[in-house]
Image (cartoon, rainbow, N blue to C red; front, side, top):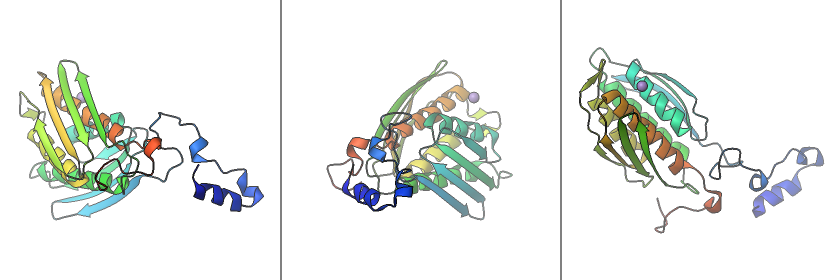
Length: 234
Ligand SMILES: [Mn+2]
């Protein structure tokens, strides 16, 4: 319990005091890294260009609830997998020039999602910062490793046997992750170790990225007021 919580509590009238819960004493419902009683880590953004119109809401401390409509069904499926396994809540409503192709829509959703992560992480105090996931999906095996470094960069070595999954151009997945990493300030490595089916490999990559970000964005209560760096800035 810190000093300000104590003072706030003492200054409350009796009828309110009974409803106050001290965050430090409230047991975590989900895990040791679940933020207890901390401020909402959410972002709501809208971005309109001549190519796309995107509305997005993100809650870092969600339960995996996704409401995604981008007009690109396979991409919706990937974002739902990312959200579900990252335990975020994510609402994306996007319209884009998909009569050209899905490129602008996929890339711009990545930009706005990255901005939302950066905004919801705020000053990054208390975050675990690093996360990784080795994710198996049948024959596909993909590693995601993330550092919320402030230096946006993607290192992508995901081998995909075929370029199209249904009507989805799989090269757009890389464009999405570049936009996400750059705008969120993530160092993000994605690497496939095996896989024959491009749908499986990409789905494993999105799930792995979600799980790695789930861990990296957690608040560790042992360092809740600190920046997880020896440099003094992230
Ligand atoms: Mn699938």
